[in-house]
Amino acid sequence: MAGKPSIMSQIKQLLQLHKQGKGSKYIAKVLGISRNTVKSYLKKLTLLNVDIGYLVDLDDPVLEAQFHSGNPAYKDDRFEQIKENLAYFSKELQKTGMTRMLLWEEFQETHPNTYGYTQFCHHLNQQLVASKPTMVLNHKPGEKLYIDFAGKKLTIIDKDTGEIIQCPVFVACLPYSDHGFVMAVNSQSTEDFIWALTCCLEAMKGVPKMLVPDNLKAAIIKANRYEPDINRVMEDFANHYQTVVIPTRIISPRDKALVESQVKLIYTRVYAKLRNRQFFDLTSLNGAIMEKVKAHNQTRMQRKPYCREEKYLAEELPLLDPLPEEPFVMKFYKKYTVQVNNYIYLTQDKHYYSAPHHLIGSIVQVIYTRTLVCIYSKGEKVATHLRDRKIGEYTTIDDHLCSHHKHYKARSPQYYIQKAEGKSNPLHRLVKLIFQGPKYPEVYYKSCDGLFSLHRKTPSNVFNEACERAIISENYTYKYIDSLLKNKTFLAHVNTEKQNPLPVHGNLRGKEYYQ
Image (cartoon, rainbow, N blue to C red; front, side, top):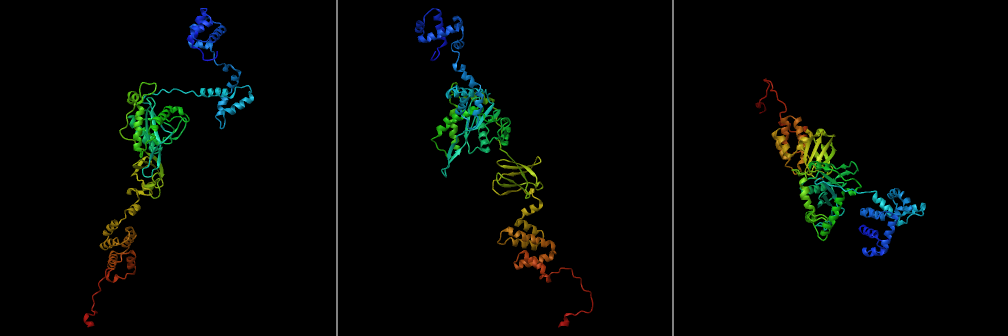
């Protein structure tokens, strides 16, 4: 029987007419089928050798199997030969450079009477499809949020340079309602990924029980089929929103078929509709994206009497967990050794932050956010700094320094003037005159330190006289005062020691003697 098989209800009519003794010509005319078709079915009936009443009572699929027992190709000896090697062929195809043509040629050498290339490929393809069955996943409302980046990017134009900037596109969807969210970002970095995910949950107005990202570098440190290493920031984000992260299996694109399908729809309903528009910043681009995604969510789905947004609002939104009151603050974790200069070096900003001096040489845990840098030692927070992104600069808390460093850092003209005031009036006036000089104040710091050293080593009356001489001479340098004290050229008018009075005696010459 060549051609398309007849409908079984019509065949039952054929059998009924044949049972009534009608000829093939009459049956063909009444049923509107060819006479050869009637003859072929009657011939099959003879071969079956069963009662017509039995056949009429059978269900249509069972009756069809009686008259059409299957493709004769599967009863061919050549099929038996190839069937035994299908698993081998499937395995060999996974090897580099192996093709179906090469497999067929090799098989033909040992089985010269095998199928032709086309039939060989047909049976091999059926084996490949049957060996990888797909499963229908039944999603629960509010349970999961699938996350991915679209393969293609959108663009913005730099107003100043005219440069076209490629922007990755973040895509997420709730699989139960297929309600989608789309947002363009600057990059696929962890910061931009977390920002987009935060905006997504705010747009969804709730938190699902699970976040299911693809194996993105921004979310997954190392992909693994059984225990992937999740990015620390992603874990902090999930803990803040009281949800969990369950990445998709590696090399299993069907696990995220819904978000992949969402991406294809976004290409049509967002990308294509924005192709002739120009945007000069992310804000305007995302505003246009939001309009198109809203229309996408409100478009009636094929074969379903509702749109994505209707199902989301009715069945999924009430089951989402509430958003936390405080926004998520992204934290980064580093370990550094406190350097001998009392600082740790944050490589992210190329900036130095002070730590308590007793921790010099020890390893500390550093947790930094967008605004703060916190340093921990042995489970205790030992320092908190405002984050500063000035390259090569130092941020210091004075209490972290040792006494020597505190003194050094505390130096200033006012510091030295106040210190001199507490020692003597001539020194105070001299130091004030020193800082009135034309040079930068720090140039005079060492001179003042030298003067204070001389003050400690020299009797106060001698040192004060030297200061007075320096002021009169308008020479305020350390070297000049030091030379005065060494040469003692001014000591005639200075009583360095207490003089004992001479004893009273008569051998004295008065002024009259010299007149």
